[in-house]
Image (tube, rainbow, N blue to C red; front, side, top):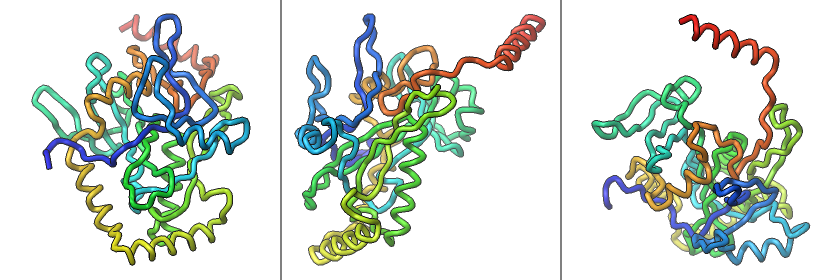
Length: 305
């Protein structure tokens, strides 16, 4: 195995909430209220839809994909969803630093180093655009002998927090049969004070509509026993996943990074990119009177200094 190269699950396509569009000569993320499933191939119109995309649209209201039937590849939640704080260099697109709020791996003039990670709110370097970044790998379809996946990327806090909770809860209630549960990736909407009643879209995972949790767990046990009889070794697969992800400092390949930066870390001004295509808070709250007074006091203090 080549050292320094993260070995990630084979990927057939992408799942996104939105797309990149060109406005006034600039390419920008545009929100959407539905999932889109694409291949890994682009043409001049953008990413080419995967056949699953059309199949699912035919079965859902208004031909909008709000739910995708999935299974997971691993029993360990953190292998299915890898989430961390991440900072990219917008000049060359390379990752500079990734951290978990406790420690981080950072490129420096002397090479890769491990440092304390205070989280973006308390890190000086993070002001240039560090934020949560999650990657979820799921399987679509019922081809049980296939280890290929589709990847859903997000920098949305609501998606990352919700998906993390769901995966750990389902692992617990199923008796560590997460990879056997019949699940669904769902699109949710919420409004907040900061969004001024404009919907924020985020991803969630539940059992499928046609099943209760009790039925889903029974289905998982049946599939688990079938796999055992066939010699399918889930424990070894999880171990291989751990080894593969830990083999490299950064998960994303160099050929993927420019597109990831454009889609999820837009703007060279250090903006937080809350309008990325996977989770949208379209309107930022107007500054309050307190904010204005605090800013004015800070400006006066800077001038006095």
